Image (cartoon, rainbow, N blue to C red; front, side, top):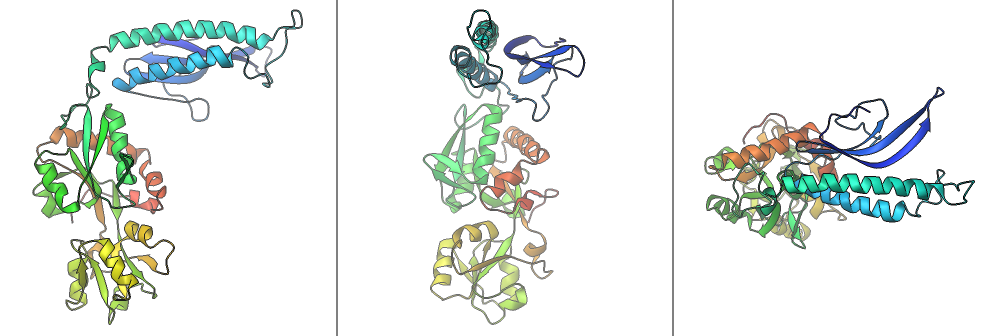
Length: 384
């Protein structure tokens, strides 16, 4: 077997008859080279691939502190495998059969030997990995290419804005939180969630109390003058909320209409309604007046409306394209808010966001909370 790796530990072994007279042996190995670890299944006589094919094996790649973490997980996994699975578990397996001579389970004896070999190999590799990274183990941020408010931690300002962001049991939930945890995992950092009102987020970033602010925040030219944004993560269109069949701006004429202050459609809609658009400080107050019958139509972000009006008699419809309403043809792009001077942090965040887009990982994050996965198609970065 051709190996171009600095260390290899055998996890399991099996034989399978090929189409010809020769049997093909396969092994499951952990390969390590530089900062990467890979768990692959390889066949004798073929090189171990750098990345296992989908469905054939599980590939895990880690950088920096994560490499050390994976070694520890593999050691624990191997201990379980060698001392439980190898020593009697799996008796229903088709490969489990008794030795016809001694009457002892062949799988137990054979796999026990493999377990001992594997344990020795992996423990030796793990020891080398741990010792080589001892200097890095003192701080989780050893490999992070940027400074944070608290070493080893990303401090995140989180508004209560479901389904995009909120805090439950100390963790951030929602798609914004999911992306934050992807970034933290990539750089080996912890995450601390700090609750904030929307109005306090940007000042907290500017004053260095938090590293990043989240909460479906639109990338706007005005905001970009005082802070910086990451590249766009998803788009967030507006929506009509009504018990009536409201599907266009023309349907708003003669209706009592309300929306949230600060959205990018407010000025245009207010102009079309002759200055009669009611504006509210939050979605909560808007919903109260809709439910009380003081409004006929509400306009709010699509994701928020889906969440707030689920199970009610209200219909939620995305704003249709309309040249009179810029936001209807140019939906806002959502990014994370960071300090203008934190160029290294911004670049590092953008690198992970780009990878998530390249791997089509944003769409399922949105879909998991009931949002339209097509909102992951952000287009070129732009500002409102």
